[in-house]
Length: 204
Ligand SMILES: C[S@@+](CC[C@H](N)C(=O)[O-])C[C@H]1O[C@@H](n2cnc3c(N)ncnc32)[C@H](O)[C@@H]1O
Image (cartoon, rainbow, N blue to C red; front, side):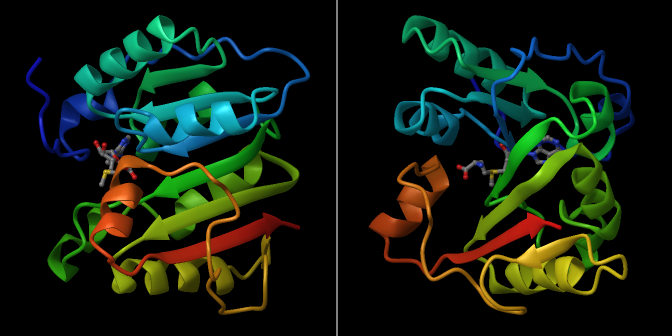
């Protein structure tokens, strides 16, 4: 199957996706990866912690189909990928207060200044994620682009409503991932010895 390398999330047809919300098992903690690609990270999380439910949100439809087929083949019933646009569809996918953790692993292929408007982390997204997270819920972001790490940190630290607290100290990166699971891009960076900037925030 030929998988597209990138799509433009600002294209009009990505604002009208007929999203199919995943069936969420009651009483089971839910972790969500935004921009989950082939969902390698969530499959590894499910192996690490099988008692949770995992949903990947991805705008490349072919990758969603591929990830779901792989999970079905491997009997990973607690991992689902959904075709949706992070920028508009999150409230249709998850009830308020339902999510335990959001992961943004290498969220943004468009990191140049002129493409700033396409960045995934924004003040609007912080408000949205805060509403979907359970009390004490967390956001983790990992990127190899320092600009994106700093920009995302500024958005979370400067939030005037103080919705999130840095898991360490204010304006501090995590020294390492608290999880054993790795996304595909994360593994590539580790193999190539590329520096990864990690953020962890907890909803207050
Ligand atoms: C650089 S890749 C990282 C994939 C994976 N998280 C990893 O670490 O290997 C970013 C992913 O986010 C997806 N993406 C970008 N913008 C999106 C949006 N608005 N809604 C949903 N997915 C999006 C892309 O299609 C791509 O698969």
